[in-house]
Image (cartoon, rainbow, N blue to C red):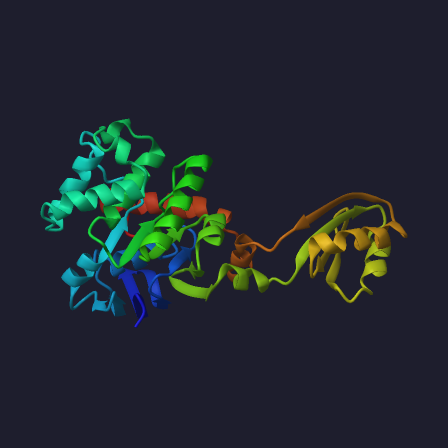
Length: 333
């Protein structure tokens, strides 16, 4: 049995279907990503797996424990870093971890030794006695990672762990997540709508849309669905350029676009020189650009819309639902 097994999972909020018959398997030791816009059902799935929400139908097991029948065992087997910060800024880093350890029934001297270990793991040993209110955003996120690992969980859930961080800090936190997975062997389930984050970090990713998994594979396998690289060439005679290069067997497709042509080829960088040479025989070239297949484009192909199109409306809807239901940040979807 894998670290997580979900079968036919459904979650409703009245007339709203947040998760719709979802199936998912995550292997032990995997760094697994859940992709999708806000409101796609990612956080609801995580909350069910963490026993914070009861499923309407279906089953879910985490570390071999059923979320309905053995919620206590599930909670002992998992660590969670929520999207919203959950640290006491008046306490020091070590004091935050001590408090968390007590909640998990950890006793000294083992608790203190474990706190030292996880602070070393996230490079915060030298800031252990400093109030968390003085930490940078990246330091605070690393402390939350340490807290999630403190009790030695089998599965670590990270719900949008880099949201709200600047680009440099986001990259640093990603590296820590990768290192923690490699060094500890803990299974990591990461929810994100940053496609580059999933591509850089995850062994496999699942694309979640409207409460269902619409694709699940390695980032490389998903992007390979789109075929080769796209080479865009600006020319003064697009039709002549298209006819000139469509005869090459390494050109998968070629289309006339506004101001030029777009060719899909099996290796963009290697094919640019011969492609431009051929086009230059029949037309004047003004620009050239090579675009690699990306998970963003995979999402567009699978769902018919881009992630960026969905973020703003979904976030606004979530805020409206939160206000209507009287719940705080980090709501139910």
